[in-house]
Amino acid sequence: MRIATTIFLTDQTITPVRLARELEQRGFAGLYLPEHTHIPVERASPYPAGGDLPPEYGRTLEPFIALGQAAAVTERLGLGTGITLVAQHDPIDLAKQVATLDHLSGGRFTLGVGYGWNREEAADHGVAWTTRRDRTRDHMALMRALWAAEPTAYEGEFGSVRASFAYPKPAGGAPRTLLGGAAGPKLFAHIAEYADGWLPIGGRGLTETIPVLRETWEKAGRDPEALHVVPYAVHPSPGKLAHYAELGVTEVVLQLPPAGEAEVLRTLDDYARYL
Image 1 (cartoon, rainbow, N blue to C red):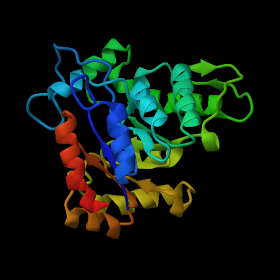
Image 2 (cartoon, rainbow, N blue to C red; image 1 turned 90 degrees about the horizontal axis):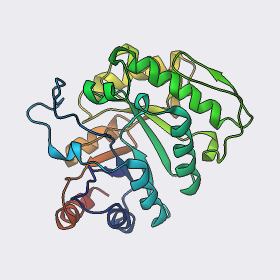
Image 3 (cartoon, rainbow, N blue to C red; image 1 turned 135 degrees about the horizontal axis):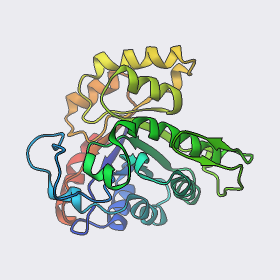
Image 4 (cartoon, one colour; image 1 turned 120 degrees about the vertical axis):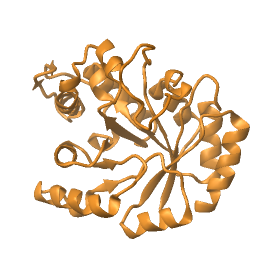
């Protein structure tokens, strides 16, 4: 099983360069970074995990810049977002960012896609909350048009692009795309339509949900062997990882603390037993 990591990198934590080097030297498979452009002080959206919102949410580094630094000092480490709030981006700009990072890293990038939970953040980006899923789907289709081998136009409800020259292209035509979110028919239908797999936070309930996703996936005509399920932000234990392996999971993303260098490296030492 591939053991990757995620962390809220901020202006107060270990740096992307230091962390990426340590991860590759120790044999970890990847580094995934979250995204929040800002956290409005006045908000009605509750923190999904309950309680007060941790301060690192309002201090996160821009993930593509941080991952670009990580790519420059590594050769094998996988790089990913967990997740990119696609609806909050101009899709033409985002397509260029994704393609450039994937190209410069030699095809090491995974695009984690999510819908978000903070209504106020989305509103500041001009995103009507009820449209965020359809907007994300539309933006993904537009980006795939720009990544196509030949100039391809796209006309959608939330964006359009003329047939264009758009280089570089992602390695392999498009990056691996994993869609995050809670299990349900709508999410699973979207995974089967335009993603390569699922990025479930925490990994609870996978015994029941993975077979349902597989059924939806195969009914959509997708290759049964091509589905990726990658439990995300996991606090590991030997039993938990063994259970994932029994379910056919081949990659898991472990949560690192949003801390300084010493604490993060101690956690990596502890997680090394799972490699």
